[in-house]
Length: 115
Image 1 (cartoon, rainbow, N blue to C red):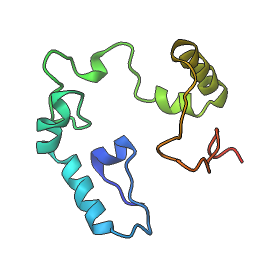
Image 2: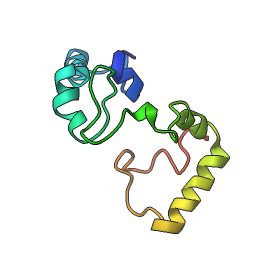
Image 3: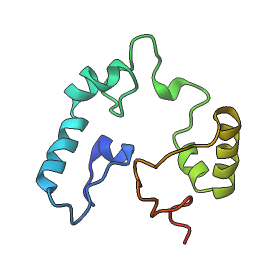
Image 4: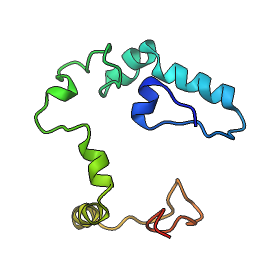
């Protein structure tokens, strides 16, 4: 897989056998550019680039005391914690219904990777 800079921090990748690698690289390069991050992304949320200021009225994300850049990866690696969080969300909003847009045929199952 190919990735670079901000796109890597976002988890965006290009598959090794992608049919249109050049186009995908061009898109990721554009998405990672300072101009796009400043004029599109940072108008409503934090940019992944350190050289782009946060949206008006917000502090840099790292300055908030309740943020931990490593916490999400740690949470996601703990299946029991993810299931507890899912249960809490379902109590508030109800169970997710309908096809998963990322897996419309349901081939991945409820817990992808747990075969």
